Length: 396
Image (cartoon, rainbow, N blue to C red; front, side):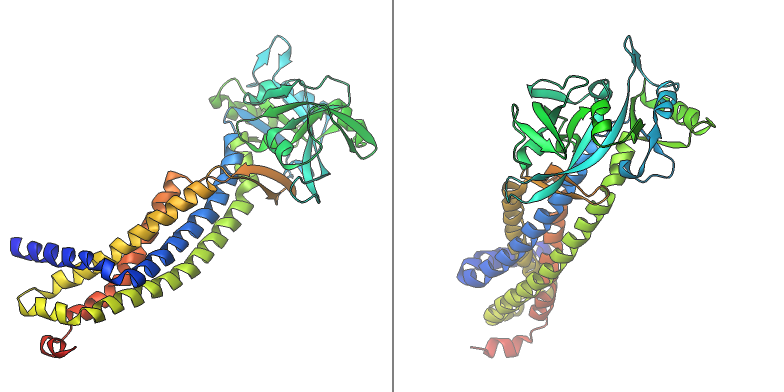
C-alpha cells in the first residue's frame, strides 16, 4: 500500500512540475474553464439577486390579503367595507392609533430610465398611514414622508437610482396630476425600494378608483397568529379573499422570472462547459502524447497503471481548479452587489435589485469545475495507462 501511494505521489508531482513546459495548452484549458465558471456564476447571480430582493422584504409576521381569485395585486379588488372587516380580524397587531393594517392600491406608471432615457414601467403604490409600521423595515433616508391628502410621493432608493426626475424637491407629472417628491426611503434592499408611494386616498381619485383597493397588508401579533387570521377571513361569509404570508406572496411573484433565468443560465453554462471539456480533453491528450516516452519509462521502472491514471487526472483537476477559482473570483468581484433592474413578469413592472454571488453559488461553481477537471482527464489518463511500453519507448 505504501509503495502504491508513493508511486501516485511521485508521478503526480512529476506531472505538475512539467506544467510550465506546456504553459500554452495549459493556459488555454484553464481560461476555457474560467470562462465557463464566470458565466455560470454571473448569470445565476442575477436570479439569486432578484430572489433575494423579493425575499428580504417578505416577513413571516406580515400578511397580504387579496381577492380570492387574484394571482397578484393588479388583478385583485377590495371594497372599503372589505378592508375594514380585514382590519378588524383577530391576530392583527394594534396600537393606540388602531390596527396595523394598510389598505393599498397598486398601479403602473411610465418614467424615463436614467441609462437610456426610454420609458419603463414603475410600480406606484397608494398606502395607508400604518404602512411603514406594518412593513417595519421601511425608513426615510432623505427628506420626509408624504402628508395625508396631498399630492406628495416618497420614492424607493432603487427607483430613484434607476429613473430620472425622482430627486427630492422635484415635481413629476403622472397623467394629469403633478406630484411633489418629498422623500426617499429604503426597505432593506427589498422589492419596496423599486416603488413610489403616496397616500391611497389621494391616488384613488387620481386614477378614478372610487372607493376601492387591491390589497391589505397586515402586521400580525406573532408569526403563529397567521393561521388564526387566515381562518377568520376565509370563514367569513362577507369576504371572498385569500391571505398569504408576505414572504410566501413575494416568493410566488418572483418564481416565474427566477426559474427562467436559472434555466437560461444553466443552459448557457452547459453549452460553454461542453466546449471547455473538449478543450481540457485536447490539452490532456496533448500532454500525454508529449510525454509518451516518459510515461513508458515510468511503467518500465515498475510504476503501475493506477498511479499513472490518477496522476494525469490530478493534473487535469489542478488546471481546472486554477481556472475555476479564477473565474469564480472574477465573477464575484465583477457581479456581486452590481445594481440592476428588470421586469417582474407577474406585474410587468421594473424591480431594482443587486446581483448576489452567494457562497452556495460559488460552491456549485467549484463542483462544476471539479466535474470538468475529472472528465477532462479521465480518457487521456486511461490512454496513458494503456500505452504499450515497448512501442512507446521507441517513439521520438
